[in-house]
Image 1 (cartoon, rainbow, N blue to C red):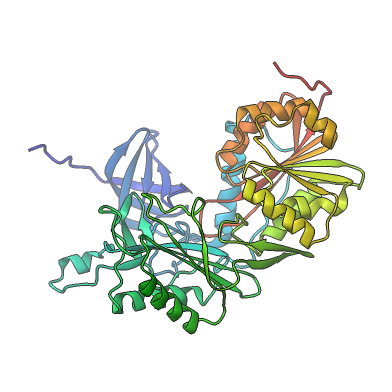
Image 2: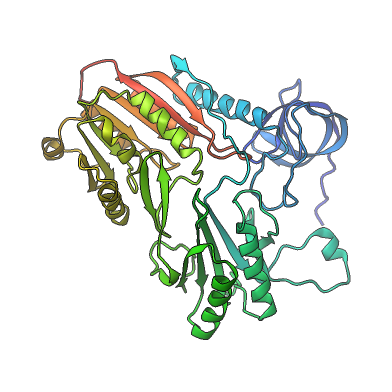
Length: 475
């Protein structure tokens, strides 16, 4: 048998940073890097490595020497197991500091750019119970705690919650989540308990069998709720039994939906969503605008911070009323309609037809007539015919997904050569990469982060780019 490596204790490690997994980062005088579980910046510990990675070691604390002033007690009983909220043990103001540090580092190291004017990160008023959408998985392979494994008792193996990181077939059964307002916890727990009591089969992702597959809960700032239950196969009596129970127990649910999905994956976007009771949408307000949110709609997950995010976009765009604006990756039209009253024309461009349909409906609902929406591939759509139809843009707003903009989209932007580009990103690394391509013609004048995702490493960053030359071509 291969001998198990015996690791030596690394003494007096001072943690100076925190990574995306919520592990403290420390470096020895010799330059060795350690990611230490359950530590935060400011902790001093002895640690024992358990795994060597490329460029660093992963380690556990073997002795506490001193605890950081920014360490706090995580309020969630599932912390460290469920895979979410990995920064709960770090004081919220310290979270903001390290998020800003990561943005600045990415902009400089990856993009080779630095903002002329860097403004303070916009903090969330509520660092908990801020999400307007949560998705949970049913599983007949509930993750067992160590004490359960060691016990002789027989435990319930069905669970409803989040997948264990790296273990797609295991689910942490969630009882009390701190991310979504009540009665989200009550709805989820009642559905799970009812299903167990009535012996409804929970999904087995390995065997691809079982009745109950997933649960989605959406809510609005006003307290309206949408619930969507995903079944693996059709069984009308069982479906109606569960759905009637949910309807009777929770009258605040304005939209009760379901779908039957027998595919290998549980994505909803190619599925037929069926209405059981109420209406098939929720209405959310954003400043003086109203948006129709369906089960498939993309809407920023923090309803309370999204207005602050768009106010930064609005400030950076600096519209005076006579501009033509393009809004790339416009989704259901939130940014487009938010800016519409400040310009002569705004055109939202989005590749998902259903989102464009919803955006047009939202424009009609809000009686906005100077906003247009176009379905198209950003890599190819900005040809001469497009600009002849919609006009040469003075300002372009772009809010791409986490992987950033395709290089061809960057090239198209350089060809369009607007006076200003306002770039919104939930991933400062890919944003920095794109800014590195754009810096040949644009100067980074402003940068401001908005914390949409407290207790995690995620953060939105908005930058303003201003054209520094008139050359609108690129090789």
